[in-house]
Every structure is written in C-alpha cells, then in structure tokens.
Image 1 (cartoon, rainbow, N blue to C red):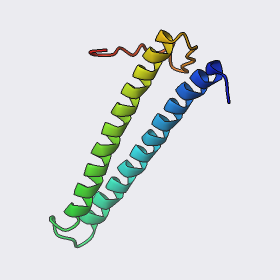
Image 2: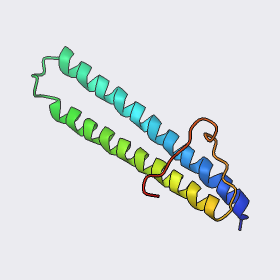
Image 3: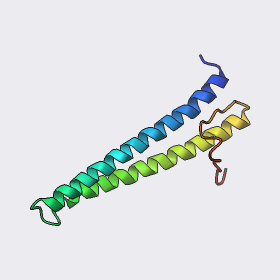
Length: 104
C-alpha cells in the first residue's frame, strides 16, 4: 500500500485529470451540437426536425457541467480533509486558484 504522502499527491492529480476529461467531453458535445445545427439549417429539414437531437445534447452538456462542479467541490473537500489530517496535498493548480468551501 502506498504511503499517505503519495496518496494525497495522486488524489489531487487524479481529480484534475478527471476534470480535464470532462472538459474534453464537453468540447466534443459542443462540436456535435454545431454539426447538428449545421445539418439542420443546411438540409431540407424543418425547424422542428433535429430539435430533439439538440435537446438531448443540451441535456448532456448540462449534466457534464453539474458533474464537473461536483467534482471540483469534492476536490476542495478532499483538500480540506487532507490538511486537517496533516496529509501533504499537492494540487497542480494551487498557485493559480484558491478553492473556498461554503458551509465547510
């Protein structure tokens, strides 16, 4: 089993990797929505045709945004817990931003 110092370092980096993956998925959904809009406007499709596809994509984007927000909150909470337990927390974004917990 890894020691706690290594786990704190790895956990923070994994949080950031997961958020990066969500960002890439969000970009992919943005491109899919752009293609769906282009196909809808440049084809003989009616205005209502293709709308369901865009609605599904929009819902997926919204859920990804919610997932990223919850992941960021989990990261902040884990950092808070690590500091309380005197576990080194190596956050790659620590010098760029300070996360503040609400009600925490």
